[in-house]
Image (cartoon, helix red, strand yellow):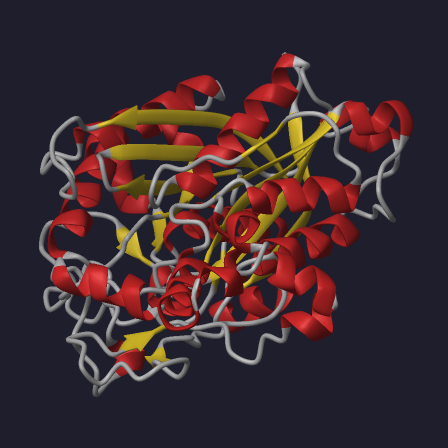
Length: 417
């Protein structure tokens, strides 16, 4: 089977406008969680989020392109542009190369903001005032479509929608298509922009989010005994994945290798994970088996770790089941304490972080895990980023409906053509 490598990364998060800025802020122990600034959230139980502040889509994309897209699509397009440049690619593809290149961008909820704004226009000004861009703004596959048009990608093009596993599913499916020979290059990841009045109200009604409104920087507490829920974030994370030999022939710099993909379902509950973590454990085992990788070779896990009482416990159980006694030597990070939970974008953003951890041989810290739950048997990286000798790493993404995805990454060793 063909091998698949990462040659470019792009991200827009509450930590920074680029993958590099987000990564350095994460490693420095900063957080993007703050009181919501984009609308009045004073009537909500949760009044905090990790917003991408100062993002001017008109300035970055141009007014005409920006108005075609909801915010989630704008973020996806900016992250894809960065990943494309980072991969050393210039301008759109053409000819035969464009026919073997695609885009798979996941999103859990698509253009939620556009739905809210347009419904208000319909109610107050009537149907004649609804923008003709409404449907393209809303449909969740349009981020992938816009990326494909911009970069000349005429192969596979679609959106994965699986709640908080959407971005990870996108990367996993892209990996499989390249490995099978269907494509040579795929731009893959996730994007989400649900920090809106309706988005916040929905999760607020589920009592799923933290209410530490007076201390937002310390609100998300992965595996801490006092954890009380997640905090919503927004952003996008995108990778350029290429068939290894083709990437090396064009002289591309390789950041890491995608080596395995595991996907399962709990079939247990609408929103709660299986308490045993069985589905998550099976996803990790499938990824390891898919990459012919022993659990002992894994030195780092970017965990799903949302800071919810049930979710964190289930993931801790799953890690213990997969790694056994070796779980104690794992360096585990919960990066949502810094980025917020970006829902469908999380798998993309955290894949970027995992690839950069392997590139830099550096594990990012977990914020606010001050009084660790007794169920945790692994080492949570805390305080500051830590140097490490990493050969392989996992990134976990789990979502409502019981969906579980694990991606296996390897260090960029032995990549001669």
